[in-house]
Length: 300
Image (cartoon, rainbow, N blue to C red; front, top):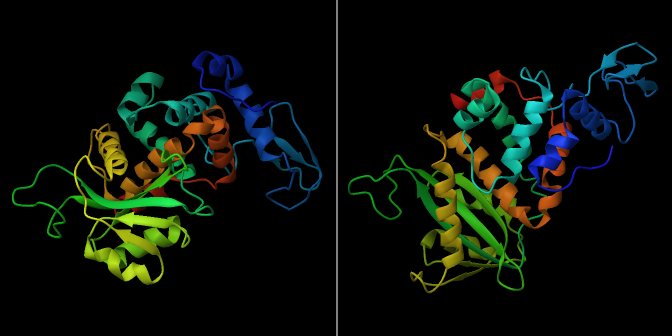
């Protein structure tokens, strides 16, 4: 089965008219490098008409969705494909309430599945940002009396963001991460995970960046509205607008999932024709994520 390309909804619906077509696509991705039985480890078998794989050794039949993020999807694989397609290709965020109404499923059911999609959107952390990188911090939350600037005593979610630029000074990649405070200790994990030590990093004059200079090439300049850091401030504004599409409170843990979704889409905007295929490929490679695991993180 050929790789789906593009963002045309009519082409998408024609390619995936039913659950059977979606399972065929998953089977092709899941076993493209060969079959290995999940029960006995045997490598000999055959693909059945229902797109499950039959093991010649133990006679186990493994479905195309087993062992993936589509495992035990209760509302049908085609609806799951449609939700993943919308999350990957829409220019603006979409809430679980909207998804529930569009596909005739409960809001909670939609939210759980969307969390699975966001899990697949996590950065592999294999390709840290390099070249010119701007870094800044921001907060997400409503107005609080007498809480301005980098206030430590606040209920708002604190975050750090990095923007990589290409040679033409256009935005190339973006990553954001929740932080506990504005200290260098809170900044270090973000730098280690997402920024190369060869990068030319530019920040404002905040003292929290000073200890990182021993390991990173950091230039600090005074932030001036409409004169510098305009593009990273635009990204921060977009992220905040993105989060506002969620009509309920987002915990600090789940904020990371929304950051993953934003970064996945903007980082692959120049490869839009393959973004859906790449997302499904990741969902096939990811192990199942169960409701209990999501709830456990929610309650932490």
